[in-house]
Image (cartoon, rainbow, N blue to C red; front, side):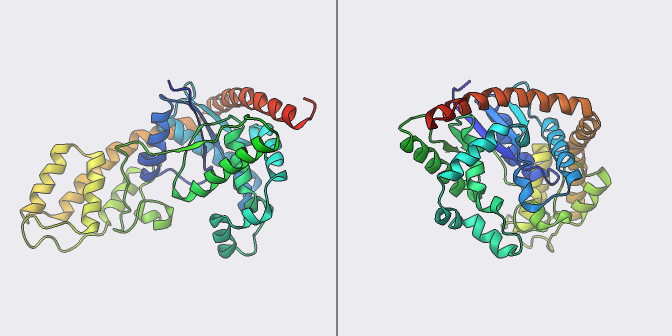
Length: 332
């Protein structure tokens, strides 16, 4: 295993869908075998949208069950609740003391949220980058898996780390680097023929890991298609290529080849394609759904996983914060 430390947050809201499964989740499962990983459920970050008191823990439980069912192993990776680490909040305070209003206001995601929700511009939104920096640097992470929308935040994490090191004449914090997606990950398309699968494309165009078989079949049978090919070997339009992309991830190569040949010979019947895809999708999703249901109903098991993760994460965080307090000049 590499000596590099990887840290990443898990959003605590929303059902996992195929896009999550073949994207970030596959990446996390791969990383837990290669690096020393800390994955936290970002329940503090959720406060920027004011969730109800009863939903915070319920959402965290649901997302934990889904990630464990899909392959994260609490024996390999440290999986914990962000709110179980008070050390993160103290480091967040220290970074806020050295973050400037102007640089926080220039963050693209902050400006976007101000435009979208002008009546909910709270300090948590403004200081999101410093909390993210604390989440990462509390474990002295050296690598962070980030999407395009998080690249600026990671750059700011590097800025805060470098600023702290310079102010206190230390090399305490590493400057974490972005770690790219693993090769072979598939971008899962939405069923409506446009964009990638996700909540932004609507529930009807998204296959969730908790969808019942009847729901999966209904969604796929309603997927967008065209009138069919008019000449042999013509290029597939986007909505048809999307269906073949989904088939490649859940069906056998022989099945994909069969329908590809029918398309290229102008003999394809989309109803048959959808029925086959629906059955193969059900066969793929149903074991995950059952495992999620099983874990979700096992409260003691979920609590044991979170307790184990909390203890491992706090051991790391306590060491880092002791060094931070010593460097700044506070008593431990």
